[in-house]
Length: 305
Image (cartoon, one colour):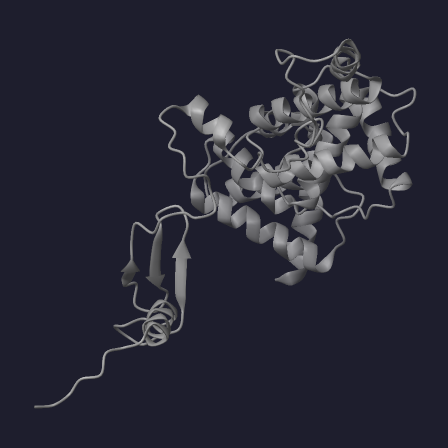
């Protein structure tokens, strides 16, 4: 008879650790733990090594409703710049038994200071405009960070909160390369366009921000759809603008004027003509600007031929 030695407790622990850190199927060391599903998954072959792993980091008491779960949660909500207090404020339960002095502390803690009120208005406005214009979360967060810097530097004195919010969002859109024009932002706020431009220049100067160059080609799909132009015209207009930017600088020129001229030229060449007045009205430029950019495009194309 062959004697089999029983495994010691240490050997069993070693086997278990090696099993968790190595896939039994392909012997890969790339084992990923999915906390939401409670599974250990092989990153190489996709084998589910373990499932329904108990969560030892949370409390062992069960919660049957959303309220019970919220009360028994040991961790708070994540920090967000889109909240006035960034999610770090303290809330004191007013129903608990306490002294008169503690009640005074609660009273003063609940009163809103000017700083809180200002940031509450600003963050609410950023989320409202961002939702209306369908802006991604990264743009709204960057706008909130810029606004907070401006507020910390006391640039809001004598200036409108809404105008500064619109200026912050406009810079964030240009920085993150999201095609939104100043006209679209102005349509979502009650602030004067001149105030927004003034606030934008102040942000650039006082916060030492680098002005990101806006690529006019990013606006072509939006306006091509509004004008009912085909995908072929859209691609042709993009190619025209790309060629133009290679040989002539676009700094100082209105991006919308370049887009209008490129779409007009492409639609004419591909037999899908649109009138200058319709293109100019849809994009929001004058016919004079459209014609002057159109002439520049024609001269460049003639030289290239």
